[in-house]
Length: 202
Image 1 (cartoon, helix red, strand yellow):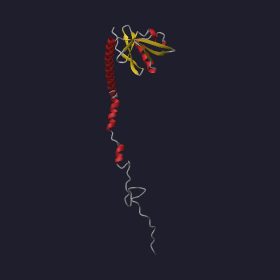
Image 2 (tube, one colour):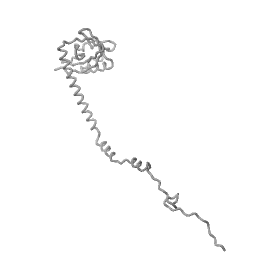
Image 3 (cartoon, rainbow, N blue to C red):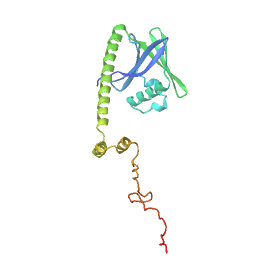
Image 4 (cartoon, one colour):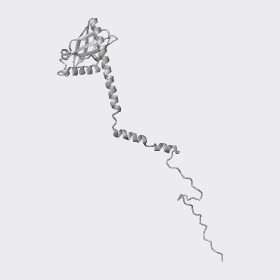
């Protein structure tokens, strides 16, 4: 069984310099943590023994252990100390402080490893971009045929409110009263005013 690709775990700052903490699951499901500044590399021994007193990671798989570490480092970045060719990464586990010792790799091995990390991370980014693009494509076509049909029908319905606005902003126009029309009954001519009864003179 070959070792899995390199994966980032968390960034670390020390002495004004940035470092990248990575992990790799080795054959036998052993996890090694590496820290690099892009030029030099420090490596731990398999970390399972150092974390054996951490209750939350007992009887978990290697990938579950990595998830636990990533979650912890997102909430609180680990500390890093450098002493010659040895580095120490420390973080809090429950009420106990855990320290992982890292040994500096020889220059030739460090360069080969940085190159390997570079291409592994590049492949990882490419895979994530393809996955994201496929997901966006699925989301764009996820509208059901019924909803799509309703949407198309709505596009065909004329804008009644726009037509009303085009007719002066009112849905009903007041018809002009013609001379002689009744005010009470429009359309009917008003009756002439009564002039009284005319009596013949005797």
